[in-house]
Image (cartoon, rainbow, N blue to C red; front, side):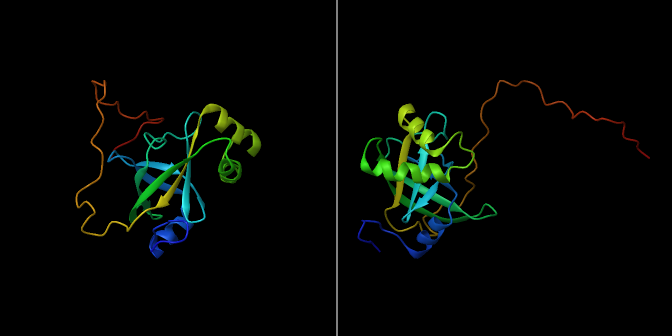
Amino acid sequence: MTDEDGRSSTPLVDEVIKKAAVAWVSVSGGPAVALWCATLEGTLVVISGPGEQAAPGLADATQAQVTMRGDHGGRIVTWPARVSRVRPGGAEWETLAPLVAAKRLNASGPTVELVRRWADDGCALNRLTPAGEPLSGEALPTGSLAEPPRETPAVRAARRPFRLHRVRRR
């Protein structure tokens, strides 16, 4: 269903957005990245950039795939999102950025300074709006979504852990 703001959503997507704190976002078919998000009016708002979380490609994207997971890590729903960037200096920035900054955990300094730093450092404030039907069971991958191990310069196996005392064997 589509509402007056142009959001295309379902009751399941609306419900998981209300309870969201972290979303897995994939841009242009790349790997999904866990991002802290704030919820506002049925959309997710994500801040990324210098001094904040890394969201590769999200600042310039127009579309993304968002996966919401439950408390135990299982996927609840994956839905397509329309990405719109909120630029500093505009009316939307002036209302949206302070709301997101107020919800930001472990922020350094007051909300006003945080919003000013985001604008000065070129951080990207993106709004992820539902833009279609969630992926159904047959459209979801059936195999593991685990990433293969990264290449490493390590040439030796890790040493056994240090033991503070000697273990007696009987």
